[in-house]
Image 1 (cartoon, rainbow, N blue to C red):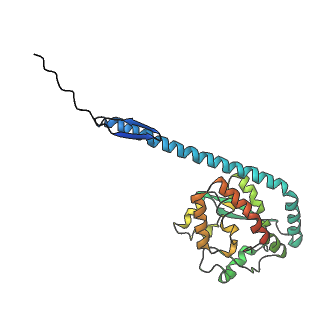
Image 2: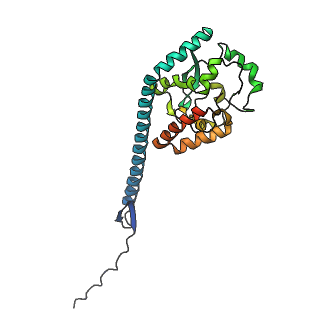
Image 3: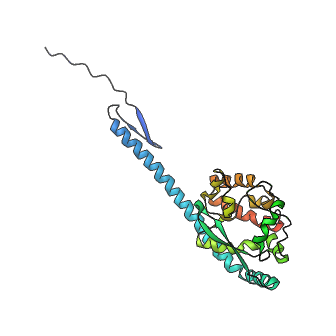
Length: 254
C-alpha cells in the first residue's frame, strides 16, 4: 500500500529591498545573491551621487564663464576710466598683483585695481598693531593710511575687485565662493579653517553680503563652511543678486 508523503512545510522567505519600489524574495540559503544585491545598491547610489555632483559642477562653471565674460565686456569702459585715474594719480602701476591660495592650496596670481600707494606692502609691517581684526589671521583697517583717494572710491564700490573676473574666466576662481586668502593667512589656519580651501575661491560670498570687513574671521569661517555644505546653483544666484545692494550700501567696505 502506498502511503502519501506529507507536503513539505511552506518556507518563509525574507524580503530584501533593492531599489525604491522594487523587492526580491531571496532564500536564506543564497548569501552570494544577497551580496550581489548589496553591491548593486551601493553602485547605484554612488553613480547617482557622482552624476549629480558633475551636473552641479557643470552648471556652476557655465554660470561662471557666461557671467564673467559678459561682465568683462559690459564693464570695459569702466575699467578704462579707473585705469586712467589710477595712472594719473601717481604714475604707478594700474593693477596690484598678489599671490593668493586657491582650491586645495593651489597658488595663483590675483589682480586688483591698485587702491594703495606703490610701497603699501612694505608699510604694512608698521600698521599691524592697528589691525581692526584683533588677534585674527586677517588684517583690516577702517582708516588705512596707505589707501589713495581714488582707492577709497573704488574700494567702497568694490570696483577694485573686478579684474578678478579674469581669474573666474580662467577657472582659478568662481563668481561665488570663499574669498581667496593670502599665503600668510593660510599659514595660520587651523585644520577647521582649511575647509575654506575645499572649493574654488569666489568674487563674493555669504559674509560679503552680510557685512564684509565688519565680520570677524571666526564668523567668516562659519559662513564659508555653511556655503560649502549647502552650495547649489540657486544659492549662488541668490548671493549674486544680494551682492548688488551690499555693494551699493558699502557696509563693511574699507
